[in-house]
Image (cartoon, rainbow, N blue to C red):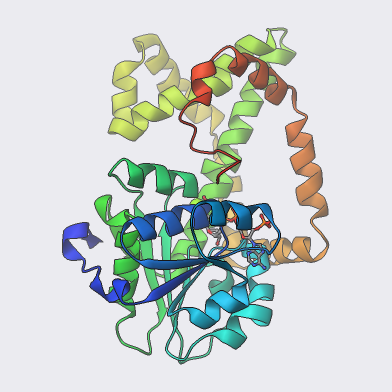
Length: 338
Ligand code: NDP
Ligand code: MG
């Protein structure tokens, strides 16, 4: 598999173009600030009168409605919430796209599941950072980058790959590695990763551990440190040198428990459930459920989010973090700015 790095990439094709970043949220904040620091001409769009609009202006960007930004742009990067993109495309993006423009995404959902169907004379690519937008910015400012995926959906101009690579390098991804993929592969693996492992799997695993200890009569504070807080320290070791690196660092007792008990927690029944989750992604039933959820005004999303926020683990963590003021310094997420 070919991996592209900064040295393989020419940024010049990008510096002659105007890039409109639609949505100054997590990814929008990262992409726009990094591209500007890479000497690219960037304009930003967000909701008029909204907080993000003010944040973007305070950061020195020219901010427009989506329709106004698209009219001026050669490259339009859509960093709106996935569930809103199709509506905004219909009303503001599609009708204002310049001929020969490049339409870009950071996730393939709307193209892959046919929610957005751009005309054949528009170039379509994806640059999907494999990390949250705040990290895309944080790593860039440290001279580093977040690895990203590049995919080309349609290429009437014949140079969409060069433009896509330059864009990816502009946000700093060329420092860490850019891998070429397809919209299908990115969409399906990304959804699976976040559902089964990264967001869904990990949080359910931590909460199940926390609840098991608390129900057995142990203090919630103990349970929190053991099953939730310490996760980061373990993950840092894996991030740095893989699973064996983590096993080298923990005690032999921990390693023996890991090797013999881990596969019992993630049992065949769990793997079977993972397969069903993947199937729902591949056959479009997850996409349909999520699109209908949005249409119904997010009843399940809102109820489960509130239930999660009220969990004893969240309150316990809040109190424990008050005693660790250093955690509040150098935060990636500063809600007043990004
Ligand atoms: P966010 O929800 O953080 O940001 C979206 C922004 O768009 C918000 O500021 C929102 O404003 C604004 N917005 C909403 N409607 C409009 C509109 N009509 N016109 C202009 N602006 C509008 O999104 P993310 O950054 O999380 O996601 C963006 C894309 O990046 C998605 O495709 C996602 O899948 C992808 N992605 C996200 C990752 C992440 O870590 N977050 C990782 C990799 C890819 P308001 O808040 O006022 O509604
Ligand atoms: Mg993801």
